Image 1 (cartoon, rainbow, N blue to C red):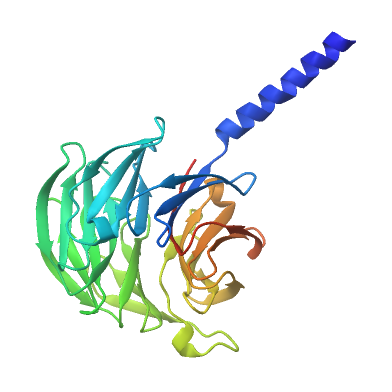
Image 2: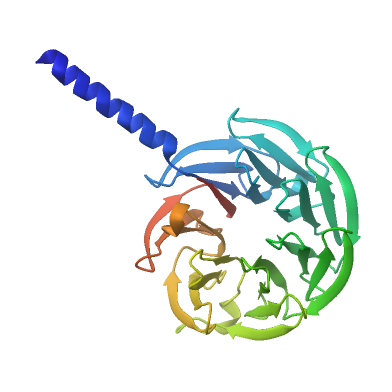
Length: 323
């Protein structure tokens, strides 16, 4: 009987180990603490902290999920963290004040916005060399690469433009005027449409990729909140094509937008000064970084409601999830 109980206990211990090993991990950059917080997305608990460079903001994974790239903005570098080895293995020459970046589908070319230099720096992550620097507008921030690999897109906060860069030639070929202070851009999976948030303008522009023209603008209005506090920043597009989710900054809400009608169907209250977001595997949950309250809100996407708050470091900014 004792042997049988021992075997059962060993089985459940092994099962727990496997479950933990398979759990997805969220990585959250904390601007003021110079750290990245690790969160187990099954248990929704903090599991660790990584000490990183000064003022980490942009944070993304390589497409093979083996490498974590972190914009250490005040160190003027992009740090390379090997997830399996759990250590930093190098840095990339990012240009001055890197803030957001985007990786080409080829997993090789990283496009980095340099806010202080009005440039987009393109880095070959294999050779760790700069292959191009592209003049854009004043205070570049948002970066995205189209899923088909044709376009790299940057936003300039002061020029109020979306800049279109040919991903083959690394040349700026067109510009789209949007509302004040564009912060973030996201392509639809078919690469035909771009979403661009304008923080001070209070809108999200829907841009046709072929014509480079704005074909729709989404406005936001939350009862009891002054319009000046409704400041769109991060955007995430659900894999099922039904909804887009827009972080509304100091309004402390995430807007749920119908991707066909562009109508807002719901506002979800989250933490203070919501910045960016990431989906957990299968789009089960949406996790938001809330800078002022220093936490991450977990939104149940089946119910479209916030279900948990997880305390992280000071001024969480970026977030990415490794399945």
